[in-house]
Amino acid sequence: MKSILNLVAGILFGLFLAALIWVASRNPSGQAVTLRPAPTERPLIVHITGAVPRPGVYALPKGARVQDAVSAAGGFLAEADQEPINLAQELEDGQRLDIPYAQGFSPVIPTPAPGLVLTPSDFELVNINTAAAFELETLPGVGPTLAQKIVEYRDQNGPFLSTEDIINVSGVGPGTYERIKDLITVGP
Image (cartoon, rainbow, N blue to C red; front, top):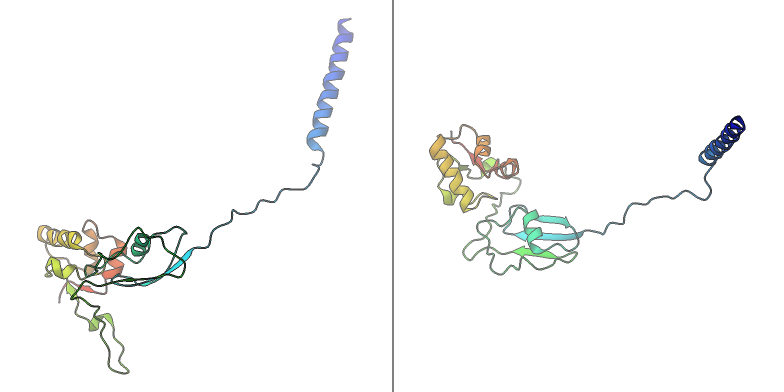
């Protein structure tokens, strides 16, 4: 009787195993599901001009504020009049932001003679070894705090040997250096 029970149990187990293999190996029914990427919203295109280091056209995410556009353009120049600017205002697609200069300041854009092409060497470079803090503030992205850090670093460590050494100053990273490298010198 025990052998008959073992035989029946073995047959049932074999049928169960065969059914499991058949279910697992058969072709699926229905159609395959195709996943599509999530829709992305069109960015806002904003034109920013005036007292910023990198005026131009920027693509910003929907819901961006004036502060986001100013940050994308490198922040305010030291000569910017920030008072009339509402940094919390939401931007609209195609909007133009003009950041005004403070009273008494205006952008200095040299006008070359006809046929003359200006290079950065044609401008008066800021000597980072001798410039006072207020002179360093004329550089794009360098405000009063960073200018003071540059002066303090120079006083503690001696003169800069190359313009690239300014990266050693806390707060001056590769991005800031790229913006100012053609505007600074360490002297003759």
